[in-house]
Amino acid sequence: MWPVLAAASVSEAASLLAKQWASLAVGTDDAAAAREPHWATANTIALELKTVRLRDFSIAANGIPTLLCAPFALHGAAVVDLAPGHSLVAALRKAGLKRLFVTDWRSAVDDMRFLRIDDYLADLNVLVDELGGAVDLIGLCQGGWLSLLYAARFPAKVRKLVLAGAPIDIAAAPSALTSLVEASPPALFQELVALGDGRVLGRKVQRFWGPETVSAEDVRQMLQTPEPIGSPAFAKLETIFRDWYAWTVDLPGPYYLEVIEKLYRRNEIATGQFVALGKTIDLMNVRVPLFLLAAHNDELIAPAQLFATERLVRSLDVRKETAQCRHAALFMGKNTLDRCWPRIVGWMLAPVITSRDAAE
Image (cartoon, rainbow, N blue to C red; front, side):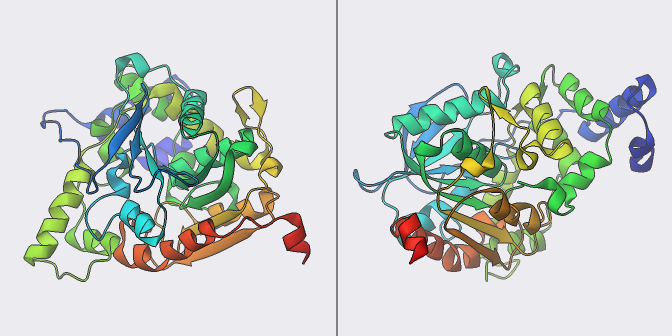
């Protein structure tokens, strides 16, 4: 089916074929809806908007707030706080971050079906203002390009910026996601939106983006757990992971189609063509200290797509690191959390490098 789709033009025939494939991919909706995953660490809701809950994991009232911008894609934001030993939230607090907040993006309900990227950028700005108007920003995966856009659009509101596993320059190297978009006519993605009456229904497209189930060995690799498969300890972790994986979020159709078209087809962020909240984004406006963390064995996003950010910005302090892991292990893998993120926090807590520091 894929070669046929790739060769089809965007025409009535292609649209019909795409609709047939989309219907096959999403299947029926007979299964009961999965339950929203629990968060492993105690937290409070600091602010609630239509699109997002601002979760507060702080253990102190003073200091620069850190805002962890979770992905808004197929699965929920609890990926950052999956389980004890597999929580990025816990790792960041242990390493020294005292004021920590997370964007818990809400699944799109019917009256959100017209929202676009601008709506999410605007609400991200509301969260930053709620935190005092200046933050250290950590963007994960799809939350990474959103964070970079935000830092370029509101440069005075970001003190330091961390991007982990984020697709920034799609042309820098091929990846699974870019290959999928290239092999599919636009009509396919439009039909996925049409099947959801203006939304992309996560529970229905799980099979389209990836396997409905994940093997125990895949779970072990993503969690980087030493617990042997079949042991009670592994079984407990596996259950938590599968509960998180089974619960999907719905996306507004326009938002989804803009991501496909502007990021993955036209590479507008890297080429300087992206317009955010009325202004064309120039990444040269990003001069804040920048840390880039990639996964060496990333099955979704090529490290080069992230590391290309270094040449697109004007930051005086750019650090890069490659973790020996797969994509999801950047946020939930025990080894990565224990080894990489404490160094990142140490860098975040250090004084900001100025032009004078750089000269010296």
